[in-house]
Image (cartoon, rainbow, N blue to C red; front, side, top):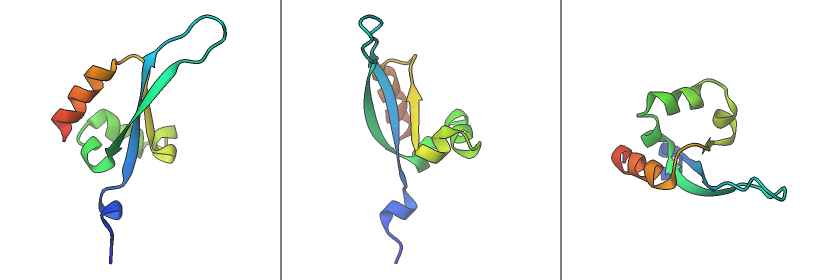
Length: 79
């Protein structure tokens, strides 16, 4: 029998939470587990998954210019 994971494959939203421009330190990201079926409601995110871009291979969509609170509001709306 098919499992829930097959119906709702997990993907990840990666959001930059802080930028570090000095001392060769790396930016800090947080990852938000999500379900692809809900993210496909967005034409932008659907295009990321369907176009053969890195996101379609890795299952990770990275945002550098959106705040964490903003992306959480979008996810709440989509779910």
